[in-house]
Amino acid sequence: MEFVPILLMFVFFAMGVPVAIAIAAAALTFFLFAEGVPIQIFAQKLVSSTDSFPLLAVPFFIFAGTIMNYAGITRRLLNFADGMAGHLVGGLAQVNVILATLMGGLSASANADAAMQAKMLGTEMVKRGFAPGFAAAVTACAAVITPIIPPGIGLIIYGFLADVSVGKLFIGGIVPGLLLCGGLMIAIHVVSRKRGYKPMRERMVGPGELGKRFVAALGALSIAAFILVGIRYGIFTPTEAGAMTVVYASLVGFFVHRELKLSDFPAIITETVVATSAVMLIICAASTFGFYMTWERIPAQAAQFLIKVTSDPNVLLLLINLLLIVAGMLIEGTAALILLTPIFVPVITKLGIDPIHFGLIMIVNLTIGGVTPPVGTLMFVSCSILRVSIQRFTVEALPLLLSMFAVLALITYVPELVLWLPSRMMD
Image: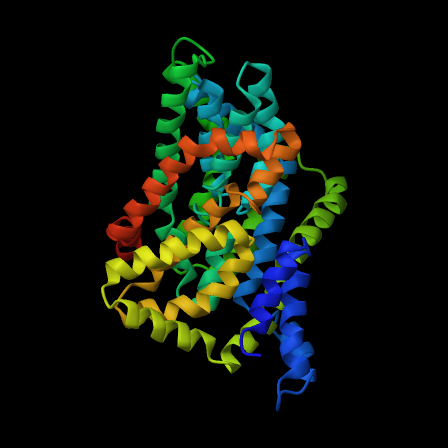
């Protein structure tokens, strides 16, 4: 009985059962058959997991991101990204990556970013001669950057589960996010050179024009700075930052861009509730599954097993990365993060690995899983909008995946890339 719920969970995944229902149903079998565990605890755990102050940041940042889409912020960021990268080889693909990086400080959701950019830029890439599979692959891979640049929802959830500073995780994500941006741009340059994908213009826009585009996008760009400065100087907590960002984004939309209307808010609230519900339902289901794993001492057993295999932190990180790559291919990223964080954090802390460093490794790894078959959500979003087969997508994504795995290896074995900024800004 000890491992039956885990096996059932994977069976449900293979059957295509929605993630939250698969996890909750698998956990329910433990409560039904385990001795000394009242069935009422299942319902209690399902509900009590939402009673968390840090998790309030999730709906706040989703709300803020939705407001920004209605406030004309995305269009201004696209115009600025075009000014920065439109002159490069494979111009529109490069703009796609730059926009995802700029949106990382705003939308906090990889799936939302992938859907938005597939509609906005993916279709335009196809019109301008890019292969549809390559357009879908660039869009999905660029969206990997979004939850790494603060404020990512995955960073909030990991901080809550691992009991570490969400503020340090936010700041620690800046360098990995920029490295992913650089790695993808290099890979796109190489592919575009081979295939003859043209720049959008012959030369970079002039300093004056770029300055105008920067000023137009300043209201949007200042939001990310507002979040980081507020957390750094203790003006508000990461959770309170979400609420403040809602207010700030609304003020920008109403008074700076003057595109946000009161009549937009019913649609904004509906989108926020739907997106938040999807995330929170997985968290609730995973809480019941976490109770089962704790009762059966599965995290402790896994920790003992891994430490027996190796006591070398570098080898352990390699093994965990390989396990996470496989997990990311089979389980949706948020669910995998919630299920695996309680297992791995005790192991890495025993061997002296910084949990902030490990958190970024874990989130980067599992987010990359969003572009790999068979259950990559970013892959499905891009392919469905651009009408590309999974096989074609996979072939086109290979050079981009190689660049992202190179960045993953870099941040795994050079921890200063993650820890340097938090150590300077949060002391």
